[in-house]
Length: 229
Ligand SMILES: [Zn+2]
Image: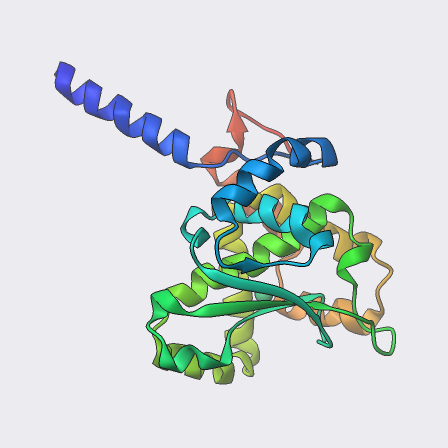
């Protein structure tokens, strides 16, 4: 019996030690405290513009399996705030050796969209956490599935399913508050055009849905209490 408890305790300790606890509001000071440590742990095979690094390394800290994955963050002309894709040469590599590119939109076209730099810090970490969750999602797909992913993404119902699945990965990892803050900003505070909000409503969870998922996830409770704005 004592042995069983011993094993259980070790297991609990390991789980606790490897998980990252949810933080409701991540601020500049708390990022600064951990940044160098995170860079030395996760910096291998990463190319990230200097001004994005604090957000990138804070978010990737929630995904320990991305430590050695080749990821490049760059600016581009895209139709949404951010986007993540496997690099074009994925077909020549085993899935564990793939590289990924995360694009950040440079400029809003025709009043359509929200720029990364206009987001509050916690929401920036949320959208970055969402893009990194896409890499976790891609990592579960073989090369043939990746090739057909692009076609799936053109179908409205499949696209919605993929985007919802990816948000759930981020919420399960502990980034629920940040995902919620990004969604709240998009739907309630951004002042984005009606067309863009309609597009977001079609494919993404709304804040009330995100809060429901957070409320169903035990890691967000401290002393049986759920903290959420
Ligand atoms: Zn996405």
